[in-house]
Every structure is written in structure tokens, then in C-alpha cells.
Length: 430
Image (cartoon, rainbow, N blue to C red):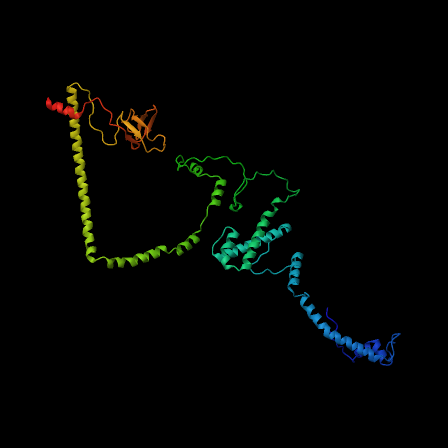
């Protein structure tokens, strides 16, 4: 609504009408009388007071012209009109509710959803649109909208990033907020509730319903047959709980992240540059004569290796001949003692570290400190092919000890054969 002083005056065709002050009965009375055909003056109006009335009217008009424009500007700024944004939105919503036909924007379609699901579907659609935009920004597809938003963070303004996060949270609430709300619909009978399996992380998107499947055993890989696909599949069988725990504890790295890390990894390039710089320094520091003698030195080392190998073969052959001679001498000694009616025995000295039955030994270097220092004798079966020797302690207890943990406490045990030197001297006397 506009004040009357801002409305344009309507001009009518024909003779000009009376002036504006003739419309006021007080002004007509102030003029000193009424013209023929004019209404009678109001009773009680003062006579010949036109100057006072005119002065009052002019003062009121001047005050209206001075005071009214600021109020009119303020109303024009704050008052919503037919082209304002709130009115356009209200008109658009009213047209949607009443079902009027409207032109579709380019690349857009209408979806028909139940009325009570419209807010949830609207939140889901907005989050899905944000997810698609973040995938385009990052140049790769992400399974979750939250992951896509985080990867697109450097390319998004702060306000847009916060709005995307809020839309994602709102969409999550739209998906899961009604889980605790009771459903009372007479057209659908209530079904028995299923037992839910405890799960670690809902982000794995695995089915939490436990339908009590037939249990499968997990055989060892050795017993699994590769020709039988069912047996191979059961060999690799793991429960969903184990997979969820491993997925929650593992930190996955995408190929793109790995490629970026490798691009920043310049240690090998620096090392290569250092080696290339050191190579000429070595050539300058070492005289050419030394460098020229390196190849002959390598040939001499190869020849020495060949000679050592040949010498080792000769040494092994000499040891074999010595062993044969020793066996012949031992056989002759046995025949000699048998000729004089002595018992048959082996009188050769045992090599160092070899213990015979009856040798007195002392334990040392054992983990059990109480056993170290105890004295005992080598028991029977000392010549068996084992890495431990039976030791009979002074207390009668028998233990198995490695030869490295034994120390001779006296001379080797005496045997039934005489001293070899004495036997040789007796043979010479004969």
C-alpha cells in the first residue's frame, strides 16, 4: 500500500473539476459562503477562520512530506514483494503441492516417493550428489561418501566442506534413525525377530544377520586337495568376525598413495649421484700402476684357489692311507694279545672330546646352576649315535648331557688291555 501523496493523480477528460481545497467543507466555509449547488457548511464550523484552517492544512502537508519518505523507503526495503526470493520460494512450493505443471531444468528428472519418506529420500539424494561431485574432483571412485569428501578436501572451500559433512551425517541419520521406532501397520503382520551378530565396525557393510549356517571346519593346508575346489574353499574358510577384526586392525594403502610416496622417495637417486661423483675421485686418488696390477692379482688368486683345492684332495688321500695303516697296526696288536691269551680290546687313544663308558666327568655350562660342578661317570650306550651322553651322578641320578657340557675330572677309565707301549716292548723281547 502506498500513501496517498505518492499515488499519481488521475486526470479525467472534460472540463476541469473544482480545485482540491473546494472538496473540504471547512475551506468552503472559510471562503465566506457557499456557491449555489454546494453542500451546506457543517454546523459548529467557525466563520471566517479560513486563514487558520489553511495554515493548519499546509503545516500538516509539509510535515507529511518531510517525515513520510524515510518510512516509505524503510518499508520498501524490508517489505517482501512479489519478486523477492522468499515469495518466489513459497510460490514454487505451493505450485509443487498443488500439482501444477512446471518445466524441468536441463539434466533433471522428477521422482515419485511416498510422502512420509520424502525428507529421508531428499537427504539421501543430496548426499549422493555430493558423493558424485567429490568423485569427479578427485578423479577416482570411492566406496564411502565420507572417504570421497576427505580426499576432495584440498579442492573444496571450507564452507562447502562443512556442508558436505553435514549432508553426509544427515543422510546417515535418515538411513538409521528409524531403527528404534516401532512400526505399527495392520497390513503387514509382525515377523519373529532375528538374532543379531556382534560386529566390530558397521562401515564394513557386511550382513549382520546370523541365520545359523552349517558349521564348516578349517582343515590344514597340507590336507587340502587342490583338485577339489570345495575342499580348497573350506581350507581358506574364515568367519566374518575374524575378517572384520583383521580389517579393523589393518591399514590399507591405495595404489595412488603408494605411487605418490614412491615419487617423493629420492634416496636412491641421491645415492646414485654420490656414487657417480665418487668414481672419478677414486680413479684420481689411486695410481694407474695399482689399477693395472689388479687384474693379474685376481688371476693369481684364482690359481691359488685351484692349487689349494688340489692340495686338499691329496691331504684327504693321505689321511685315508694313514687310517688304513692304523687299522692294520690295530689288527696286528689284537693278534699279538690274542696269541698270549689276553682279552681282545681296542687300545687306541680316543680323540679329544670323545668320552668312553666309565670316564669320570664334571658338569659345567648348564642352564640349571644347581647341576654345574657335579661329578659323575659316563653310563652305558655312550657310543650311540646321539648328541647327548648318559651321565650317572654320584647320587645315582641319571641325566643326558651334551659333550660340550662335560669336563674330564680324572684320567680316562682303564680297560682290560695292557699298555700299548708295554705290549710293544714285550713283542720286541720275544
